[in-house]
View 1 (cartoon, rainbow, N blue to C red):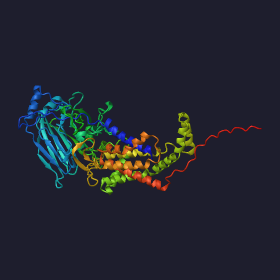
View 2: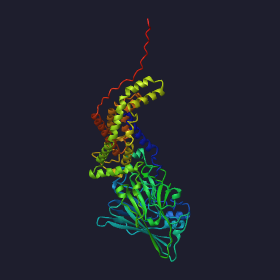
View 3: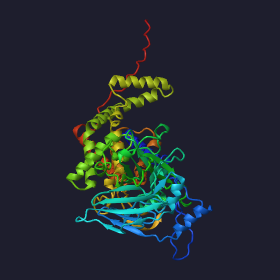
View 4: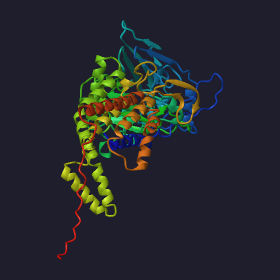
Length: 608
């Protein structure tokens, strides 16, 4: 391995860093809700929403009356607790206000001990929105009631329900029944519509802007998994988060194309780096997808919410109800980690249709087939040795063993190049004023000695997909989130903290991290071993290489400790491969013959 390998590492690191800066979307203008002062003891005012997601203009008499009626309502809470989640509903509007995943810690250090996925700005999460304007206005006036205010599941009581019901107008009764399951991350929502009149009810079937029926919404936004150092420096790499929908083909998309606007979707929802909230309708409903842009979340940006102006909605087609007829639509709501083992077990409610492929919400980059294989291998190693840090070390070792033949071939090629250095130096001196002749002479020299000038680089090319696949899984696999390694390294998906400083310093922040420093030391060691293999003729390049270990320390300082651990182990195993290769062969290059010199013609002797 020579300077070209070191330069390749620099380029890969700089590409990753530049990619996160230029294309990471850095967190699009995030918002906080606007607050207004209210008299003591008066409940918080929540602006009512219309079917398109915008807030009602309370300057109009009817909307003002609706807003005032909501202000004066006593907000009753309903709580649900299982072994996996803790949910709080607001009873009167029948919406989810808080959805806490009990087994996943809140790593920000602010708020609850476990992560809550519903932002404060999501005022109408899992609300019903009707496309018929009059029906929507009456729905906003409606007051919901719950059949209970507390549900606690246990092993003795593994399943229970919570039902919200209301009457919309004079003729329509609506019920939302949530069914909860112990040990599961999904909830079934049964939406029942009943015609109370003696006449057919067609309001849900009436067209408005070429749409009928209703929609179920999650959002706007989903709470982000924010680390303490990200509060001051911001989150990077959030380009692929936010609203998504899947039609059964290709990848989940943020927006459907013009030809797909009426396509049936298998699921839709919101997701961030490690978690997702997905709505899965029964296949017979032929649900469609709409990504809404809601700009009423306040002026202040925040890193706590992913995609704060986006909401994902399932649009359900309309229907008519005969006299006293009722109809029930079922939608399964998954709120949990983006874990392949869990997502692969989720099925659509009521009837089986196309495969859901919920695991496609996990984006593993361009080399995703290889990344999936390596994630499967990483989880397999973890099942044998239940420590993801050790699993990362073993996975790194396996990749180095697989690539060892290529490494040996690269070393041999570089040794051959090293032998030619004296001859190449002579050629540069001889043809320093004629680059064209120098190139021809150099290529002729390579051909005579059977040396490929790219032989030291080509064997490393197949390792680039492996590197990027590992980079993808170590940066986005929820299995590594809060996974401890040893001692102070208690979260492989976050930077390690050896010492917390009492103040914040430039560049390094308020923490001393150990793994990036070890990585810098191994980079220096590796560089020292390889520096003699191919002489460096450029003094500026030599000086730049001396600063490489320091550059790597600061480049990886705030990266996930799992990835820094991989890179450090990769350095150590590469050094070991070099020692092994040098032990098997001679370190001293074979002597080479100097270039033949042209004999000067001897003057002819004169005859006496």
